Length: 378
Image 1 (spheres, helix red, strand yellow):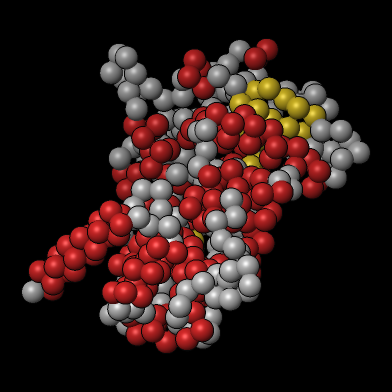
Image 2 (cartoon, rainbow, N blue to C red):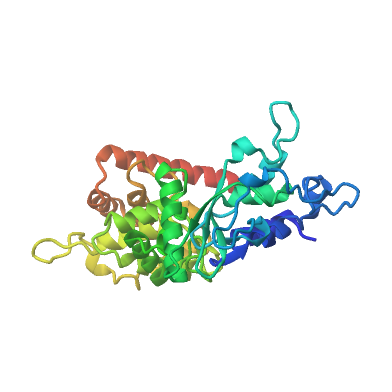
């Protein structure tokens, strides 16, 4: 049997390929603690033989149960696949909250027909059946002992390849869920990769070059946080030279070698720092007076490593000013890592686009943060 934490981690890191719904259900029902709570007693998956129930195959009337248009046979959720490449991460806590939910009569809600509606199923040319929308509802149905439920069925053109079917499903999933703003930007990005969305592929290209991962799209690399800011930096061209994101990621990973996560704000902020150092005027002269004193990133990495030996990534990204997040981080790097003197720091802040009042606010925030850290240390 397994622990909640172990299964939660496995669900979060499912490979971006196809999985049988029933295999995911078996993984969830392997959790000892949830079995002890009796959460699976309404299904064949309970380990308590005195409480386990058989499949409730007549939950929906025979005429309402989904049938495969190609074979005429009823579709059992036991045989249905889910394509994780474009689906949202299945959050275990959400599943548990549904299993624990009570109805208006204060009795367990279980699998409710009115709330569940119908799921969306596609049949690919090779005969495989996929739930392209209704992942969580399908899991909840199985956990409540229902395997024959209502579904809207789409049959792919028999001439389509597996990848073409996948793209169609991913696009439909994104439009159905993402355009209503219910999906996280990370999830929209992940599904966009499958149907070759230009922006998603651009973001993926940067992540691959940066050796960073988001939702398993570039596995084996540190997980990038602050995705929304990172995505905006890439797509809205917030840098004169976007390749500095790659230099920034490498520099941070060299400095914090043992970290498994990578702050998106810090990556963008350090890239912005490099960007300002590299700014030139119409005559191709550096704008920042001290720019020629530094090679990017070679001269910055040693100072960043020294800073990282006694500080975490968060210390450079907290207390960000609204609307100037990566500029704030770049300013913090100039002040805390590079230790620019006040006149140079003021010049750098001006190039970042800060006004005098904003610079004063930054100084107050940094001062208060420093004092707070000293008090904690004491």
